[in-house]
Image (cartoon, rainbow, N blue to C red; front, top):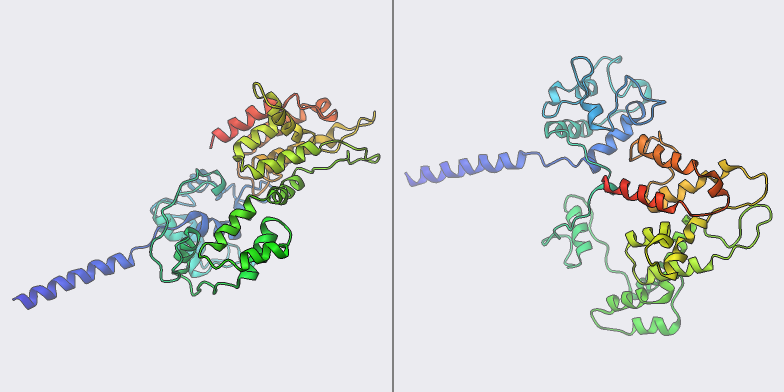
Length: 375
């Protein structure tokens, strides 16, 4: 009797464990679904009006779920009733998607990902840059690494399902060279190299990182990237290329990196540091950001030449690249109407743009805050 009970329990456990193993893991929309839709569907059914067909948008949830006349491209929870799934498997060349003439074919794995995503509710996620930042739980166990560093732990978790392993630790002189070029943009002196190479302590590497982050040259190295983006120059950029004194802004950016200033404070001071109540001299200098553009005071200046001011506002401060100039761009991450609001506002200030004034920075700051608060 005991023998039968034992086998019955083992049989039930086997069924239960098998069911758990066969249960599909949650489909990651950002990393699994969106890349498939972007590669195979968005050209004809995405945000670009000029190439969109059948009035169908698959880049937005409301577009995918929209009633197309008794059917929908996506019906959450019902892949068998979703037109998208039907078209992916159709043997009729007139109905098959993507169309045969495109030369694109989804693999069976990709089709199953889309089907499982629909089965799980067809949840769309916003672009990762608009999602709130959360502190994830650091994985604790891994067969891929013994490192306790959080970054290594997350990498190891991903590698658990891959046929890869961590590379062996490199030699100290290679690490030294990499760190100096990455953080300071230059090689170490002989004295600096010997300080690290002769340090046999377990935290020698961590101490080196701390020293380099505290080095004045770290801010100079990091500032180069930002100053390139905002088109920093000490001349006006047109035919006469006259000198323009803006070196104080360069020093402000260097100090901001060395002090590890928060990005939101950095953006506020750049856009409207001079309008902050009781603003400091340094905050006023920060608003020199608004002067970093080609300028001319000649009589034949064209206001349209100055619409480029929207690029740094969209790219550096909002992280939207040049899409503020292209409200219908295929990769735009916010609505056309929102982009057009910013563009129209800026284009309504031609006189102020020509003469490099930032009297309208307060309005831009207000608009930017409203935009960010929507997310």
